[in-house]
Length: 373
Image 1 (cartoon, rainbow, N blue to C red):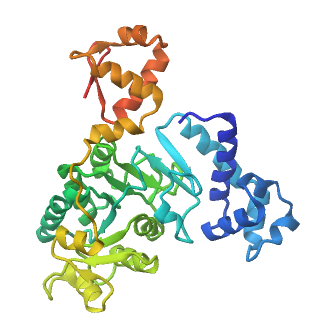
Image 2 (image 1 turned 90 degrees about the vertical axis):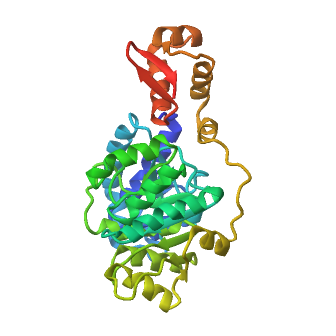
Image 3 (image 1 turned 90 degrees about the horizontal axis):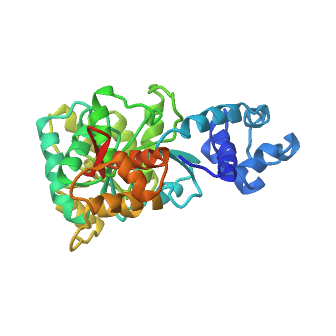
């Protein structure tokens, strides 16, 4: 992440506000509305902070202590060497659907270059104890939805989450994992390779939590509101009588988003939740991706732009220049030759190559040679 000094200064206060103990998303937004920028909040006096409606003494003390800024300084140092983008809730790249939720985080961390404001976004959630029925439906769902090219959002957890995200990858759909910890790691660790594939394919990871945050139990319900808030609709594939999938469905309904559920056998423990959602009119019954697309009013694209074309448009100027050079060559190009043809330093060329590798557009070969993927 390369920042101008002014951008870095803004981020320091924005992340600091996000990290201030007792300053939740609603309070942070109220402070912004009353006092202006995050920096102005930190420069305000106690009296000015106390005049903000509904602000607590805990929040005022946290801001004045500056502890959040100390944590923000450490986070900025980490971000400088990472392909991670911090998104302030007023930034154009911040998910606009999520921005409309009054409890949305004021800062998100994004690993990968996915458009979080894609035309169609679907959240798919369910039990960790997925059955063959649920896994098969995930595969068929992605096949059915391919003409509509939705971005698939889930939690990268065991069971339905990972089944949906693997199926999306296999069918060529972009998918984003919303984490209950920082984007510097993947939990469960078993899914780290899938997470890497998601990022290389053009998807990625999103979290409101800073680096080094552990996947503690209380973070998961908090994470679920982001899954629900980012999407046009939430689909529950399999769910027991209680659990995170039902929490996500309730959150989606509270945000006035569509909720769908896959019906199951009346005596199947992992379908109890889905059947109750349908029975109590909390979710619409679907049996296929076509059902969902029809109910959402989605129209199929005539032809999807190649994933590589979509990625190219999201690259910065240096990355586009280097990638175009590699495209012209049928064979791998040596690092020295790339530096010579671009008139760049070795460090600049390597940094740009790393960005292209992360996006799955370039592969490195023995002998410091590079080729288009």
